[in-house]
Each structure stands twice: as structure tokens, then as C-alpha cells.
Amino acid sequence: MPALTAGIPAAVAARMSLAIHPVPAPYGAAQQFTAGRRAAARALALAGSACRVVPRQAGGRPLFPPAFAGSISHTGRLALAVVVPGASAVGCDIENAAITARMTRFVLHTPERRTLLEQAGYSARDLFAAKEAAFKALSGTAGTGRFWFWQIRLSQDGGALRAAYGGLTVPVWMSSRADLSVAVAIRH
Figure 1 (cartoon, helix red, strand yellow):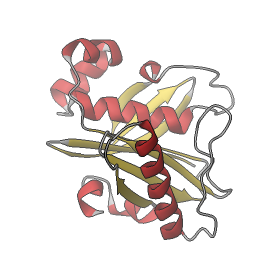
Figure 2 (tube, helix red, strand yellow):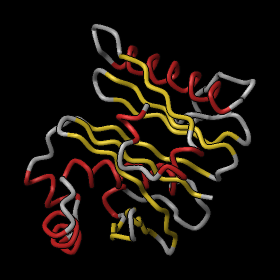
Figure 3 (cartoon, rainbow, N blue to C red):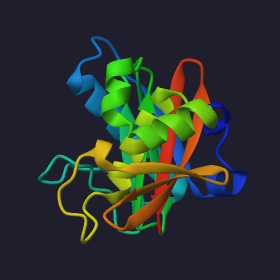
Figure 4 (tube, rainbow, N blue to C red):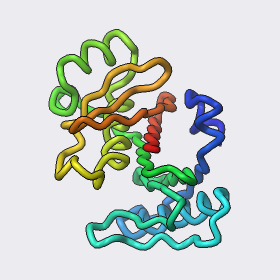
């Protein structure tokens, strides 16, 4: 998936197994769920897992097989799954929606808007996806408790973003093009 991993360092992309699956018509929740599970099965196969079934946990999160941390995301038309064998947690997000100025002000803190939007050149959609991916990688971690994705703080850290919440941090890598933003967060 070179187009979806452009911008993600080769060393990071080499550890990931990434798969996509189109969402079939009529593009509803059931079709998005099925496409996500098909992408997850493909990503697990690429990662070498014998188990390719990803059931739902009680809260609705996907339950990947032991030793194969993974994450699923989708737009209305495309599902994405990322698996990183041996990671503690993975979060991914794929976004194609326009992020309004109002939503940008709500989701991004003033320092994020100043340093990441204005100075570093990320789009609001990129940063929204980064927070979603980081939320998936951090939620459920001991000590974080219940929190909302917009509470995560983003900062620039070399070639990646750094997401922080509750004293924990996770790197987030972005791949961006005009019509799509993909973010991947990996916690080891």
C-alpha cells in the first residue's frame, strides 16, 4: 500500500501489515463493519497470524488475536486495518471528511493550531486522524481512565507527531494526500 504509507518512515511501515477493503453499496454501518473485518483478516494474514477472525469486545472495540495488536478504521467507502505483531497497542484512522473551522477549534488546542496547522503544515483532517489513532492506541491503558480523543495533546517530534494523555505518550505517523489522511499510532 505505498500510496497509503507515503510519509510513514520505511522502518515503521516495514513493521506494519496494512490492508484495505472497499465498502460495498449501500455503504451503511453493516457494510462498513464487514469491510473492516475483511481488511483486518487480510492484515492478519500479511502479519503471519493463523487466526484471521476479529470479534467485537464488550465495548465494541475489535479483539485482535494475542501478539497481533491491530486497529480498524473506515470512511463511508474504504476500510483500513493495521496489524503490528508484538506491539502493545495500535491505533489507525482514515479520514476523507472535511473538518470545519468550528470542529477544528473544538478538537485542536490553541498550541496545536498554532504550531501544527500554521507552522508545520498539517491539515485539520490530518490532526483529527492523528488524535483518533492515538486515542485507539492509548485507550484502555492502565492509568488513563475514560477520556475523549480531543483531550489528547499533539506535538511535533522529529518526523512524527507525539500524542500525549495522562502522562503517556505514543508516536503517530501520518500519510496524507489531497483527498485522504491516514494516521497510525503504535505503542510498544
